[in-house]
Length: 141
Image (tube, rainbow, N blue to C red; front, side, top):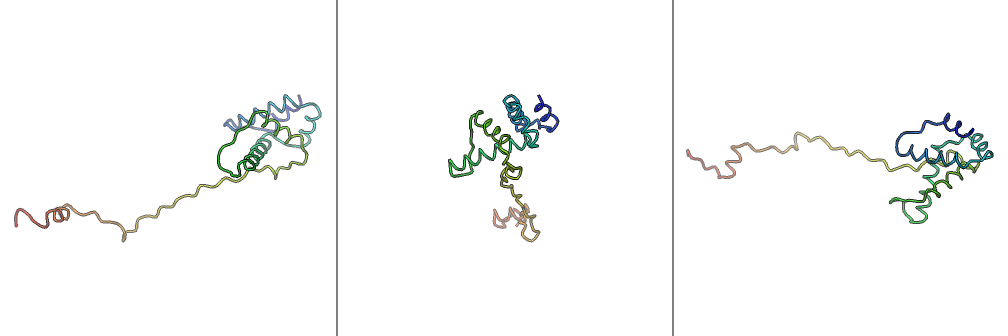
């Protein structure tokens, strides 16, 4: 099949969890594509990682529309994921710029200032602690 070779040459899918999901999508597209869709995919230059980003973006949109918020997890059936993926490859009007995943909130680095020598709390000496506890009273006078 031409499509199998096209995806094999074009991509180096990662071995992380997202890469595994991408492989599932790739395998489904290959198994479902007829000759016409194969030609369309190859001519478009579209690839699986971009398809995966498109699927995530579409699921995010659906979740926001349904729940009115961006926080929380969302799930759907495999069939729904595959239908979004097929739509990505079947639709010519989907361009790469439209599928960039939304930016995640960057974790801000907390800067802890170094202690200033002037504001540093001095630990009392043993003699000062003794004097504070016993009021200056000693055995010798």
